[in-house]
Every structure is written in structure tokens, then in C-alpha cells.
Image (cartoon, rainbow, N blue to C red; front, side):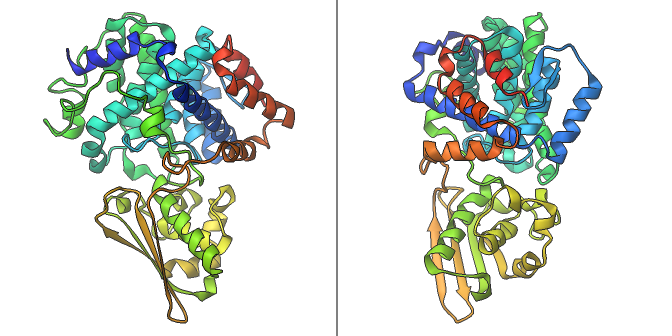
Length: 448
């Protein structure tokens, strides 16, 4: 059996009863976090532009863009929600994928779920299986194609969406293979666009492409049934001929679902995941040593050799570029004692104290066992050196946010959009998602 067929077997043959309680709980956490970061982006420039674009496009009113009071086609709704949910770069990470799973999967789950009247249990099934596909394909291919400049959120993302959508529509084995084949031809997205509005567009395009693939496959549209392993298929084209781990990766059921292990990183800061370890380390040094900006002569940040390929703006000029600037994130940590939503605006990036701080911060590469490992070295004006190494930033599966911290993040994200009563009701519905008869009930709560 080929890889694509093996994946289709997993998607078609898995029922809700096969998910561990931990997988269900982690899935619900992903739903809540995604809703929060999506609603928080409604007033972001990228969010406003994509909403205007979708309104102008029109479309059969099949699905709602949450928080926007806008109903459009399922594909357009998935596009808009994908862009919104990734606009702040505050959404979750899956490290074997080196990408963002929920911003492609959940826009599709909500759009198709509302269109087809899916239950909360079905929506959870779809998400957990789509997450599994993202993880499996990521393990087999990402390390070989991410470094070439591809953005895995928009290369692998459509495949995970196809898996989730196939589950919602109840596609059989053959049509699930077709959906995967179609989705692979929606793969794309270049890392050179990081720090611009096009990065969240990658998530929207992946969600829209995956939804379109599922709907076309359901209607009988054909595609390769072996798209992952074909000679000119996904793995060989994106990674290079035989430069992947397709044969070494088992695409069947694993010991634990990926949403539990390796699990999601829930972001504590609305910036690229590659900055989080450094921010945690810098904040800890300042807190533990009562250190102020005026006491710092120089900061050296020792990072994995892959990090400079992602954090590409040593002197950022916009808030979006600041999210991909190690130097700015460390400056914000020192100057503001944090790196929250208010730090990543054009005005905050361009302020004079930041401009003075940036030349004192240097990024230095070194080999590390894990990509996140970071060491901060601070030289003070009085000649002392302070050093701290962080392996797992707050929010990673190894160092998770508590449930209370998740709720705090969610509340901050949505408090300008939803009333206090609605916030509590949304939390309650997500906590009981597997008992919800129709995902549309939750969608209705998320109107502005």
C-alpha cells in the first residue's frame, strides 16, 4: 500500500472512540486558542483588507467568517478566517511540521462544519485527524523542503485540510485519496514573504485550497491517488528526488495522537516561534537581576543555525517585521518587560529607545541539539556577564501554559469583540464541544 492510500485509510477508518481523552482535551484547547487569535485580528490591516476582499467577491452564503458577521462561500470563509487567524502570528505551532496547524485546519473545519451541519464531535474528529496528517507529512518532508524557502504552513497545510474536510463530508477511501491529490497541487508559499501580510495569506490559501479540494473530490473530480509518493509527486518535487523520509515514516496509527505528542505549542507572544525562547531568557535575566536598559552594554543571543533563515529583520521598520526580528523582540523584552500585542506596531518598532538598543544586540549561530535551544549572554556596563540558557519556551508541550493562562490569553484576545457573558458561554461550549449537536451553534455565538 502506498503512502497516500495509507493516509486515506487512517482518515476513513478512525472513529471518535479511538481518540484518547487527552487528545480530545488538547483538541478543545486548540479550538479555544484559535477562536481567540482570530477575533483579535479583526482590526488588523491584513484582516480588514481580506474581509473587504471577500465581501467584494460575494459568494453563496454557506459559511460564516467568525467575528465579522459575514457569510459567504465555504472557500471564501476559509480564506478569510485563515488570514485572520494567522495575521498576528499568535497562533499555535507544530514543530515536526515547522508550521502552523490550526490556522489552516480550523478555518476549514468551521466553514465545512457549518455548511454541512457537523456536530462538535465531528469537528473534533476532523481537527485531530488533520493535525495528524500535518505531523506525519511534516516528519517525512519538512526538514528537506523548509530550508529551500518553502513555508510548510502553506505546503503541508492543504493536505491536513483535505484530511479534515474528507472526515466532515464522510468521503470514502478513493475520494479521500483524490482530495489529497487535489490538495497537493494547492501547495506553495515562500518564506521570503515573512514579515508581510502575505505570510497570513499562506494560511488562508491553504485553507481555501484544501476546502476546494474536498468539495471537488466529493463531486467526482479526479487526481492522483498516490500524490505523496509519485515520482513527480509532493515529496520528490518539494524535497528533491528521494530526499525525504517517506519510506521511513509510518503513515498509519501511532502510539499517541500528534495533538498530544509531540503536541502543540500555544504561543505566549504574538511573534515568530523562533523568538520565544530568547524572549523568555531575556525576561528572566532582567527579572532575576533587576536589570534595566541603561545597565546593558551588549547582548549576545546564541541560536540554532536555522534561526537566522527565519528571523530576517535585524533592523525592522514595521510591526510585522518586528515579529521576525530577534533583535527587536529582545529590545522589547528589556525596554517594556514583555512582548505582547501592543509591542508589535509600527510606532513601537520605530521608537527612539528601540533604535538605540538594537545595535547592542547580536545574533550568533551555533549547532544545537534542538532548534529552540537559546543562550542569552548579557554584558553589563560595569563589566559583569550574565548568562542563561533556555531549551523549551513557555507554551511548548514540554513547558505548557496552564489552563488558567490559556483562558487569560483568550480573554485578552476577545474582550474587545465579545461581551463578558458571551466570553463565558464560548468557553463553556468549547469545553463541551463533543456534546454540541451542531458546530453552527458555536459559530452563532461568535457574531460581533
